[in-house]
Length: 410
Ligand SMILES: *Cc1c(COP(=O)(O)O)cnc(C)c1O
Image 1 (cartoon, rainbow, N blue to C red):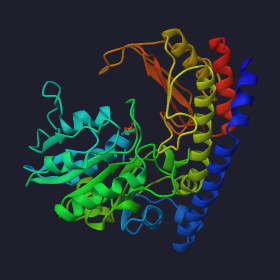
Image 2: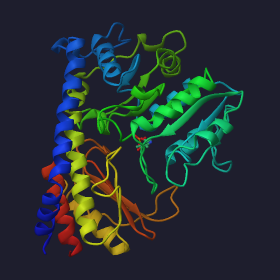
Image 3: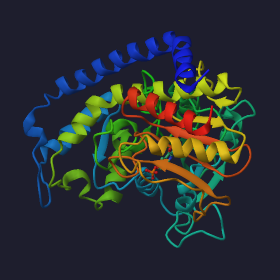
Image 4: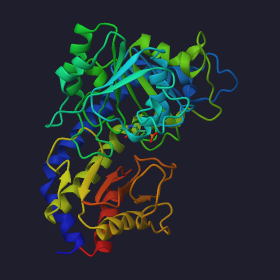
């Protein structure tokens, strides 16, 4: 079988899975339209502002629409938040004071948060939470990949004010968590430890399921606008959605205590943020289909994937154990060759600061670093796992997969 035939076969096998994704896209699009209609989104909301941005109706309406979609009381959706890490960091600093204590309910958090928290005494930067005397305890997931409610509860101290959890697998070989998984955790926290907040790192999970963690009791969802919820259109930014009290405290950290969300202008149009949210159910569906097709093709070639093609998904990340370094490099090179931007670049493994092994990366995106656009990478160590995510169109994902398979010689 050649690459085209392998893809055609996988596509046939996946017909029902793809149909389910299409019907979810319709449901989520309806939800987005409901929120837009509720707040009367109109072209005047796209107008740029400058200076302090007092009464910026585009900014405030965007936040209101966002809060509605997330089933939250309030939201912050801003281009000034530089990245997902910046959003998570702002939320962590906004919600803690010296002497407070944080519990992570899903084991080690995403790499970039380790320096925010200050988990490693050797590399703890001066401005970390630890340096601000905020304590931290990590509770690993259970063997089966679930949240260990008893262990989380045991880790909560009188000075604990925040429990954090990560929805996506990130770059670990563990299952991603469904939004409803956070329900029992939220219930335990709210019933037994009133005053403690539950914050979910929602990166890569938005618009994948019918609900978000905030619909199941999480006090806060945080993420990046150049991942799922920006729909491939938002040029930069981050968001937080959740309880009014939590959003207000974070707003004081973001601008200034006492000023909060009253200021913040944007001299370009707000249109890409609205349009990106409108596109998000579609774009995420395209990325999911790309991930599932890739999983199925490699499963048929005898390789292990997580999640497997036919398993329900909580995020857009696909991991594939390619088993050899040559396959991993060639897979990434194939993805790069089929990218709309920088197709002439040839990825090679290289040393990256903070990583023990060399890393190979493929990304040729319109928005720099946007991982809702098709990208792939992996560390050069056994079992040579490729992590891939994104895809603005399924057609692009399909073409890129075929290119990668041909470049790999399978
Ligand atoms: C991407 C990601 C982040 C950090 O976002 P950046 O925009 O890369 O800073 C944090 N947590 C998870 C789970 C992510 O996937």
